[in-house]
Length: 504
Image 1 (cartoon, rainbow, N blue to C red):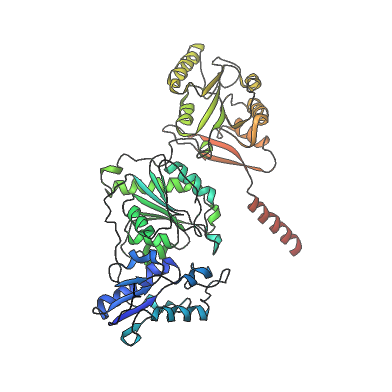
Image 2 (cartoon, rainbow, N blue to C red; image 1 turned 45 degrees about the vertical axis):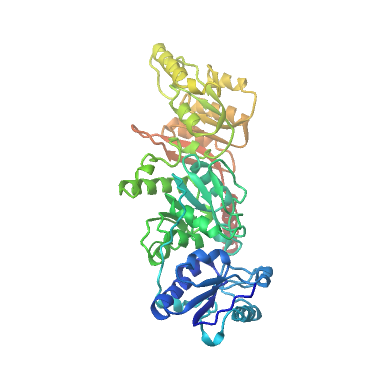
């Protein structure tokens, strides 16, 4: 077959740089030129062939970059494509840039062409030039509801803007319980590349020519997308799909470059390592609820009032996403909290400890005034927990004796038994010995002074006490839990201590 050659009036350009900049500036500038200044010219653009759907509405033909360019493996997460590990703002090597132009010129008659090359480096002139944007959508008939698209950014360039992979994993672990989750990005720019599941569509390693078509299809059918600010964020905004964005440039992404005033929720952060999965999921839950209240969705999403689990104890939320948990609750009471855990945590086994009798001090999670009430609580707990009886080990004894009946290491212990000081101390000391390494020791009613003092006095070295308000319709109760001091924070503290000593 003869090589393509265009001997007509044409406008020619090429692009090798960062996808987000291409979306928000260069392709929009070319579209304006097509419709306003050169309507009778054929537009020719050389670029990664997968980007064709972005310019399909105005470009006559797209030409793929030469194999020699791909073989160089240059960085494309920049205004141009500099060599690997170049500092921000670096240029494509001049010889490579010239070779691209010469290669492209072999496809058309230069005497009939208007050649418009991209600005070299970080040149902001284009922000002051007219642009025309296109709202992207999918023509594919397949509909998947409910659906979310997640872009788990993980680039070497500006790695400080990466949310940790384990956080993205915890988020997806929960989302897939109520949504089909599409994971999108590039192998060099995203984590979770090997994440699989029945409700997971993973396109990160997908490398067929229709990849961007597929991504746009899923975005335009999604209830919302999740991303840290990056190129895919801009694609979501240009598909007019509600977008939850983690980043440090709210004005830019929510306003300045939000061309169609797409609904956005922006979590503004200064350190991308400082966010956690629960914060993200709570944000998403609130965002969805706002969209539902404004009747943004059709009936397909009205039943999804909760994105994350309804588990109402903040200490136990730290276990969301962890698999095959073995846990202990001291003070089962009527079984309300146990039901909550069994519904919303991935539990393999749960030891429930309660003597269901009166004894010195405060009984269980409440205060049974008579033996009759204690027995009523026991009967209710056994009745309501029957659907999970294959996962429950009942130990009807006081906690100081019950601990000897547990012959394995456990992932967590929830202390909600006798709330008087010596009993809380006793439970913390005894049950910390059966915890796995990095297991969770936590409990209820931190607002109760004897409990609080016991938790403070028993705090091990290297941990801090966390507390959080429980979700309750009546009353005010706080959870507590021990959490290891973040190693990075500790390094900072040590460095500051050294600095202060030197200054003094």
